[in-house]
Image (cartoon, rainbow, N blue to C red):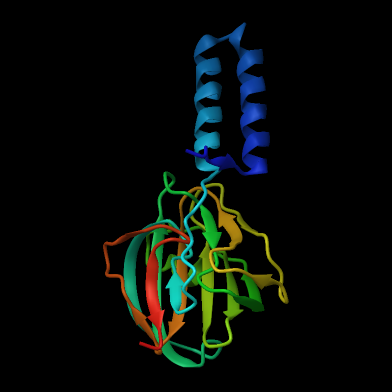
Length: 210
């Protein structure tokens, strides 16, 4: 079995924490243990496991690991009018790498500064720091919204407007508890329900044109 890879910045932070643990050991072993534990958590949090990405172009995949907390009707100019919003809450124990639900081109990006409400609150969707990524797949368009959480909030995006991205390709990540929302047009038949656990790049959120 392939071991999960670790995102580079996770390696940097965990190494710094381990060095602090070594320095603290001669003065206070309890503090040293805390730093070692934190280094272990950072390696766990910044893990980037391999995913078995489906090849069917009619599928819309989950952009995030976590639990579906809301499915709602929405209107979005980018996706062409009426559609569905699927909201996914990521706990600190979920993988936080966001992936593209479809293959396509990044046609829209918009970053918004915001507040720092806990990501599980509904108002976090509209008021927290967020980043919108619109993807044009030809036969359909989807939009992914990265929403930062309350602690150590920072949205990291690895794609730019004009980039091409494969189905399940990496878009970026959000640190330490967050929410990811997926906007799909009404031509997509949503396959998940509130309460479902999903995995980025593997779980099927919807089927196009069904």
